[in-house]
Image (cartoon, rainbow, N blue to C red; front, side):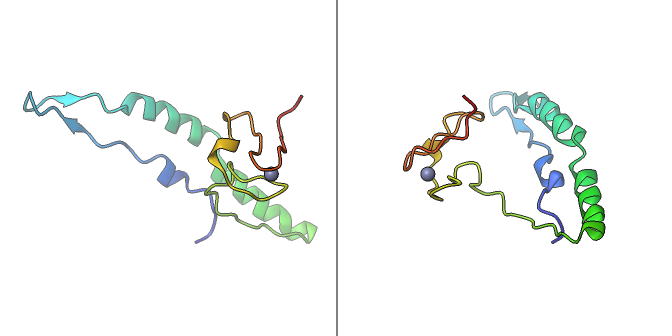
Length: 105
Ligand SMILES: [Zn+2]
């Protein structure tokens, strides 16, 4: 597989949720929220960024390394411990093991 950022998977639609008490009706399934999230993912043009990066490395003698993104936001860059509690929020990282933080002060 070429490329780690699978925006096609990330932007798959949500399943309809039939209402068991009203045949033919549907329950809220977060579709509107997902549409908004999909738009923001696709707006970034990740595929074009990856293509541009891969094109650039041919002229610089460097290389592109794709990384499995699983748990990368929970892993400490210093001690490598993975703990979901280290990620207090999307913006705040404080390692529960070595107290390393990447949060600007
Ligand atoms: Zn750490």
